[in-house]
Amino acid sequence: MKNTILSLLSIILIFNLNSQNSQEFTINAGSYYYSPSTLTVSVGDVVNWYNDGGFHNVNFDFNTITNESFGNPESFSSSATSDVGALIYSHVFNIPGTYSYDCSIGSHAANGMVGTIIVDVAGCMDVNACNYDADLGVTVDDGSCTYPADACTDCAGADLGGQDC
Image 1 (cartoon, rainbow, N blue to C red):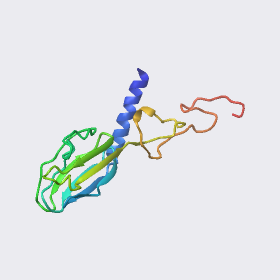
Image 2 (cartoon, rainbow, N blue to C red):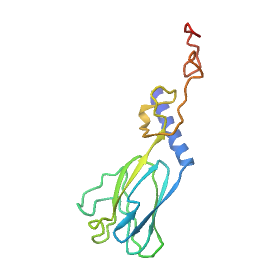
Image 3 (cartoon, rainbow, N blue to C red):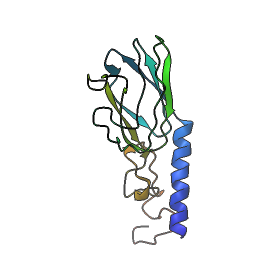
Image 4 (cartoon, rainbow, N blue to C red):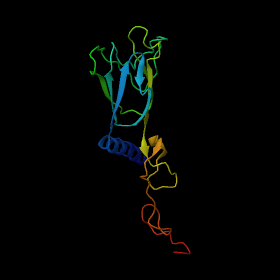
């Protein structure tokens, strides 16, 4: 039970730290394109889609070509707009994973108007570090690993009492 509570608190801490350090990204949408078509962000980052011209939306719900669910960690879809320069949609990615999306207007997806967002979780990836936790699903090492102060203490600061200490 104690380990479960500590794991949950660690997950909340990582999500809070990531949201405090969030970044904004822009994707442009135009004649059968999203640019960039693939983008990697961190949990808590914001992605904004802007219309370069035409009538477009952002669809993370079902694949317009196959009519099957994208199977994304979460599903959403925006309204369409034809206003040049307009914000089509803005989303804060709080759930890690790989998201596929397309423009569900006409044959836009079939003509290549598709994209991918990869949402990473930043944290400590060194299994020997004091703050490593495999349950967090960390996918990017952010340099936050912590270690004992010296070879004679453990992560809690307790004396290991070895021969060379």
